[in-house]
Image (tube, rainbow, N blue to C red; front, side):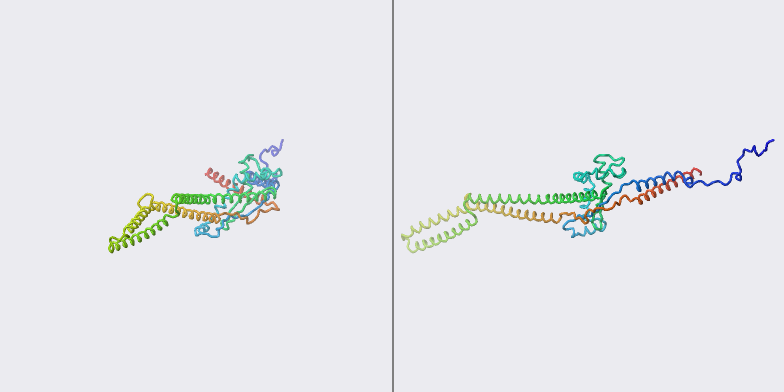
Length: 387
């Protein structure tokens, strides 16, 4: 006969099994938390603390200004009040050059940028090309933006150029080369603006000089053709001669009239008549010489005055063109831009990038925030289904 307790197949009482053993702490953590938070943070810590290559940072500060930058207009003051500056656009031109393909091309003429951005000792995620980046001009340009940054302080007008590299000498050399390229750009802009304004003023002055020379040549040709220097002087002399002739003629006529009244049969009358006729002929000739025909002085004086007015107008035009040229040169000097280096490119003695612990903390907070948002969304969906 068997014992009924030996045939019992139900659950074992807790008194017989003893107290339940607690699970390890890693089994108490949910697998979504491990996958979303713990694993990315662990990978970030491994990369930033053990794998990431150190990068050296060279900084330089510069300002773009003009000669008359100290004379700020009321509009410039108003623009500065809202964070804008009259020289900001000039500084941004240098910024655009630094980050442009032209700036990178200038660097590639001086350095082996492939070796600067991607030395063999650098880790695969920091150097160029990293996974996903193409080995071409566009790929290098995109990678270049990871190593170079430039900013502008609207309060002081100072720009900061920051260059990262895996060797301190490379960082400083690239920084200095970019600043030199910016100086070349500023000089080219100065030459272009000054050349356009000054060239136009010089062209106007050359045209005015040509007109003065032409008017002078026409005046010389007129004098040579007519064989006198100034028709006005000649006309004055002719007028004086006419006055003298008319006075003498009047005296002769008065003498003849008196003689004819006193001695009508005087033998001097024919001689006086001859003298009177000679003076009358001389007066008629002088009058014809002064006016009345195409060869007289009147039309010649008119032509001469036209030539003199043309020369005076050309001389005034030349004086105005010369004044405009001097003003354009002075304005070009006042508007000339200069790139002043406030702080020369530094030679870093220690690597400050990447900021390892800060990067790990940033990854941890980012994935923790993502996990929290996902957990709230999932909780809301589950509660909605239960209702």
